[in-house]
Image (cartoon, rainbow, N blue to C red; front, side, top):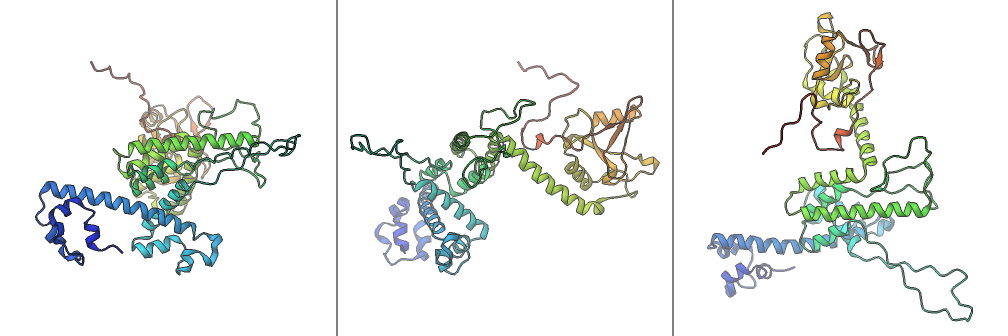
Length: 412
């Protein structure tokens, strides 16, 4: 273990002040004597120097943590490194060694595993032999075929940026978590694409096939090409985020990485949002009775509006594109007719359609928990969509388009 004197020698500003006055056996108790007379510029210079030393030490520690994780796999069983040290997994081991929280230890393990995977070059795959055997008719096998180089993982740019001090471990982990792993074509045990698994279209491909055309199953070569395109797209996204790391904090990097992932994989983005939506909808059913107000209050409460937004996704009117934040809660049973302020008897409408409904004597009815039915005077009943399109949640960060008023004139 390095002594305090050895570590202090790595800080030029401290060395210029203390010089040879610090004895080799000195400990931390003398630090105030060393830095006590620093000027403002020297304090900032020393902070930057200590940060550089810390980053180098953290990088080495991250690689070692990654190596510890590779020696503590499930396949190693009780012979694994973490298991030999009396811990269940690598995260528990690192938490005990570093003395940090379990979440922070898990972050360190993720970064270490990524570094080891990207920095330890995999062996090159042997080239395939020519058809008909490796020997030529003359008996001369000829020159040995060159091995096929293996592709580096998509997060290799993040490992190089961390090595070159362009990223901190926190930024590295934020980008990794935000981007996630690139999607892959589902395959069977033989490595062939699963026919019923359409997956996400490759970056740059059409999102949906032509109407009436039955999508065909991909061949193994086509599936490999799609997987490679996704890996290349994720690698390019990682390089882009590395360039932005200098002007973004970790929270902004995480959000930017998630936005990039949703743009590169729109099918997966909608699937992920639908899964979160269904989980939230299940929770609504659990606390529905707790937020119903019956006749105690006329206006819907904030909790009820959240529940309606989770259930409806936005407006429930036909051909309206307003998100939930632009909507108002409407009683399908008028309050003056003993209507109740309950979730099952409320629906989200934008301000324009809400006002139109009352002026045109239009009604929205519902039998129990069945579909909402729009009843306009002189028209047949129309069933309202079960929920609004969920595109606002993940596909765009822009406000909805303007309606019923022209765009403002350009500034001169």
